[in-house]
Image 1 (cartoon, rainbow, N blue to C red):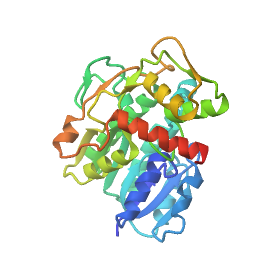
Image 2: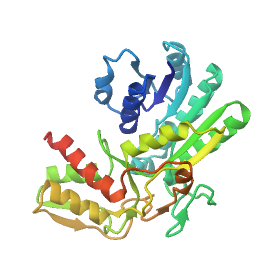
Image 3: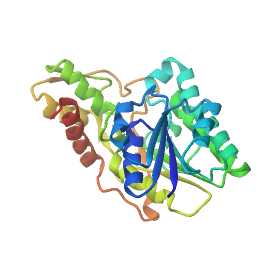
Image 4: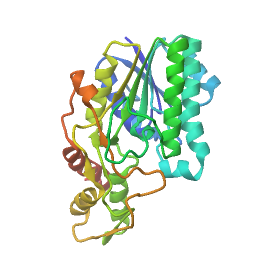
Length: 319
């Protein structure tokens, strides 16, 4: 039985990954400092004989190393998901992205060197590319010019991982995520809209003019893709993960949430096509490399969005 270490283990993606790994016969050690993750999200696994959780700051090398040393078995895989997921917070205070996104990567790599852990699977982001307008974004495009601190620290993490592969790390997979949606939701545009309508049922305030258009992937498809890539041979692999379409607009998401939560509410849009500093208003995401490897998603962006709206609404309204 292989032991999988998941950093950011009490977060949205990690919970879904843990469920799949346990179902497929693996063991999981989840680590999280609980700055963004929530302990109750992984409570469902507490009675599982092959799951354990520790509250650890993954940028603290000694604490991280101790957790690995005290694990029930040698760690075979690291799924590095720990990062700051609040992009505006990182704009206001760049140290947040430095510490929770880049320094966690630096510490994870050093811990893997110390304990001779052979495989790293890293959650990167489409934010590393920056704002390329209508150009189709493929894995080899350049130059990479992120416009948020979050994207900058993800890109720095990728560079550090590539250097580690050259120096000592036997294998690394880089997953460049799109916008991932589903439950248990902790942040994101659908989550924010539902929370806003719960607070003010007669009006939904939207940042920007609603023309922002992005690809959205349901978390179930994301986990499938990550596990698929982890089975592909190769020492260093980089994949965009996402749907095959060009995405949906914020206006469409707002209308879908309004119709589901409070049909009589007015939608009030802001100005400009950026929701916040560092927001990329539009991008076209190529997933041809992933498709060529034999994987494709079950849902397109619209289907994923509609499903996630219903799932998050049920969760937030306790239906």
